[in-house]
Image 1 (tube, one colour):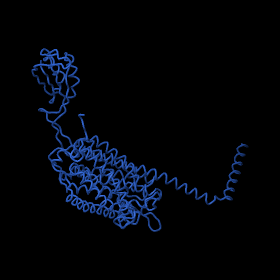
Image 2 (tube, each protein chain N blue to C red):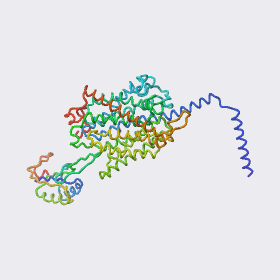
Image 3 (cartoon, chains in turn green, purple):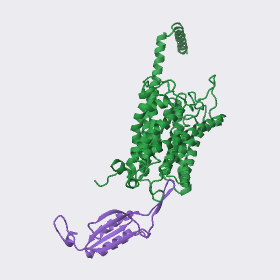
Image 4 (cartoon, each protein chain N blue to C red):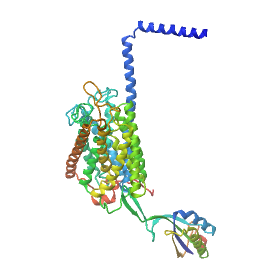
Length: 464
Length: 112
């Protein structure tokens, strides 16, 4: 009893001594500044490491993810040419981005397209740009955004698979990246862009990771390509089943993993918003796969592997604009809706209209992206991402369910602009390339296969 | 000498091989084959598109046997490959003029 009293007394004396010390000696200002700098540095290191990993994950989506996904869906004679189209984007868009496209997308410029101050990456250094993200080097932001610019035109290749000349594809998609992708990316994500929700856009459209910028533009442009180029020789009379659903399966699973970089990386940092986007991405994908395969099970009597992975991709597409704005339960709803809706678009609508969107770039990306962009306006939650604030800094409601009915209109404006620029831009560019170098291979080349006629090699050599 | 060509269900290959070894057949050639007879193919769906696959996977066995073994071999195949369902396959027999072993020029039954 006595010893306990002593201990308490000792503790009390010690504490009061410490308090007295703290009151009398203030931390020197330079030490405080050094501490603050170190904290900032630590946060920057954490954010930067996640963003570099995310950039690599998004590249993984194009190659090998999309290349395998699309490569498995075509016939054996076109497997290499299809994979090569995705790989070509990894190389061509990279160079283009460094020379001009980054500037056109992310320099301040006008409301519609960026300026030319960052041509040749001038001024894109290792210091952060506080407008885009205060904690990571601007070059990290630049390289991360580049990976989005790569996959977007690569997605379109699914629409003209098995019939477009390699040269025409390269020229068309280069022009498309400059005249369709860059303006759209600028409008939604660039400083002062017309649709930018956080940097002073006229119509703040919520698009977390590229529902409109990536999926609506690529999907709608894909539809235009399919209509302009016409059907493959023999379609739909001749059977054209996928030559390897196994390749597609591996590709789709890589897409799922890579998409964590795409969506959670779009938080541009490693904080809780990234977690939110990660969780939503995963939930929506699972729900969409179940709904697509389930629809097929009811409709055809069997749930197919191709159906399940197609549904997963549809879910990934639809959750993209919403990933950093909605609650997990909303993500499940968005995913389920996307799985059922895209199944309907691919299985029913395509055959009603009879266009040959060979690998369903429109049915999955165009339809899923449009649905996701609209549902983002419905389900956006200010508790997840307080993006709208009044002059005093009070958080305003985000989506329709929170009472911001106006947001649905802004989402629709974003969607309509994305559709318009995609249709008009793609039509003009296809016409241009068609008149100069021609778009399609000859029917004989198409029957022989693009691997041999465009690249002089074959995907599979059995007897050797 | 006779040549026996038997087209069978792939799932019956092991049973047929064992039955043939039992009656004293020492060599055979096995080919993976695709085809159909009266049995029609099946339907596949890919993203709602329907394809009829009418060439089904089969296994083809080829062997050349002395005349006195031919009947036993045919009986062995019949009893081991039969499921009783359509698609069980067929057996073809034909006369063989000669056989030559490449290693040492042996001819006729001795080469089998």
